[in-house]
View 1 (cartoon, one colour):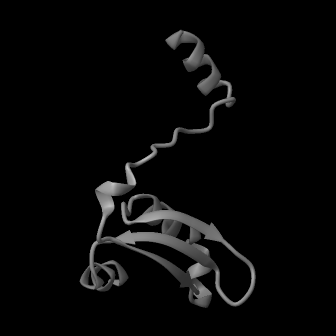
View 2 (cartoon, rainbow, N blue to C red; view 1 turned 90 degrees about the vertical axis):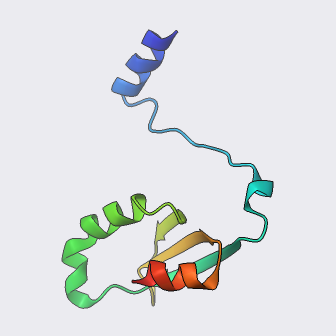
View 3 (cartoon, rainbow, N blue to C red; view 1 turned 180 degrees about the vertical axis):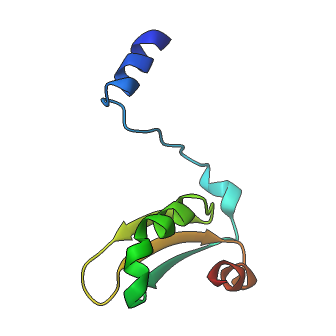
Length: 88
């Protein structure tokens, strides 16, 4: 069975995996939607920015969007000070 799964992964049929968290583990946390506008020159470093987002556990979802902002992020934060730290 594992060999079949590996073949599906290697063939591109399986793109990734998802973890479903128990919501009660996050009681007291805040869900925060954040709009991001990249600086004009930052567009050249978009791949690095997206890689940094993937490495940030507080970012649950990140969507590249059109319009006034470039990204919208769904974050889970335990406190307001955690948001301040994440902004840095």
